[in-house]
Length: 455
Image (cartoon, rainbow, N blue to C red; front, top):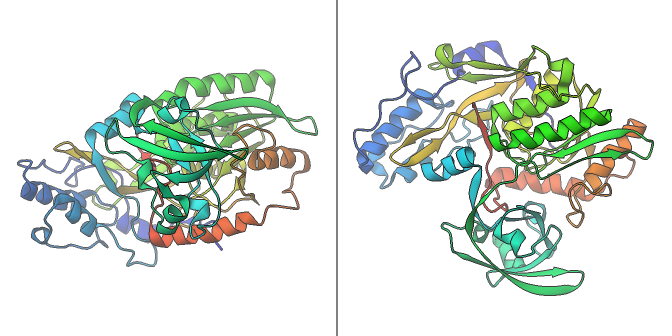
C-alpha cells in the first residue's frame, strides 16, 4: 500500500545533492551551446548539460556517447536508474520538439484528437470495460460528439481487449495534424462508429466551476483545473470571484487529471484557496544540485489575489494523474497548515521538476530540482495518499454532485469524516497503479504531461 511520503529532508544530504537552475558552470550560466546540430556535437552538448544541471548527475550513468547512434538513445542512457535507496529511477525526464513545447506553454494549444481514456484503471484487466474519461472541449473529439462515459469497444480496428492486454494506447497520440482515429463507442447500449482527424486546438485549462450546496446547507466552491498554463489565469479569477461573492465555506479543487505545468500558476491556484493564511508565507522552494544551488535555488511565496477566499478547508480531488505542479499545490497548502482533505486515489509521486533547455529545435525537460514546502517537506515519491479513498465513475460528468469524488467532498463537509462505504475498486486501482510505477508511465491521455516548470 502506498504511503504519503512527505518527510523532512536530511540537511546534509540535501546540501550535497540539491540546487536550482538550467545550464552550466557554478556561476549559474548556461551550458555552452553545441557547436553545430550534427549528432556528434548534440551528444557532446547533452553530456555536458546533464553533468551540469541534472539533479541526479552524481548518481546517473556516464556512458560513452559514441556507443549510441542517436541523440535520443544517448539521452535515455544518461538517465538515473534508481541506484540509490533515497530516490526511485527517473521516469519523468523527456524531450520533445521546441515547437510542441512552445505551442503548449506559449499558445495554450496542443496537437491531438482530444480524447483520453481510463486505461490506467484497467491495466492488466482486459475483460473490463474501457471508458472515455475526458474530452477536451475545443477538440476534434468533442466536435465529433465523443463524451466522457462513452465505452470504447475498439481503437483503429483493434479491440480494447488487445489494447489493454498490450498496455498500448499510442494510437491516441498523433504525430501530425490530419491523421485519423477510428473508434467504436457504445452509450446506453447503442454502438456507433466515430472518425476523428487530429488537429491543433486550444486547451481549456479550467473546464468547469460552480458553487454547490451540501445536503447540510454548506456552500462549496468547485473548480476543475486541468492544465497549469498561463491561460488558466482569467477563468480562475472569474471562478474565485464568484466563490468569494457567494461566501463559500470551503473550496473543492478538482486536480484529478492535472499533470502539472507552471509553478506560478499552481501558486496562484493555491493562493486563491489559502486566502489570508498564505499571506507572505512560502509556497515552495526549488532546490537544485550542488553545482547550481548557490545561483539558482528559488523560493515562491503565496500571493494575495483580490478574489482569494478565506476558508477553513480545501478539498482536493485527485488520483494517479495528479502530478508534479498539482501535487505541489497540495504540499504547499499543507506546508502552511491549511486543512487539505484529499479525495480519490494516491497521486503520482513527482516532487521534482524541470528547467527546460533547447538545442537545435529540441527541448529537453530533465529533472533539475526538487520542491519542498514551507516546512521543508518533500520527496513524496510514493505520492500523497487520499484522506478518503474513492473510485471514479466515468459515466458521471465532472461537476455532477453525484460524481463519487465530488459527492464525497459534499458529504465530508457535513460530517467531517469519510463515508463508511468507499468503493472497494479504489483499492484495486491503487494496487494496479503499483504496476504503473514499475512499468513506466501509461499514457492513456492522448499526450500527457507531468511538469513542474519554474515560470
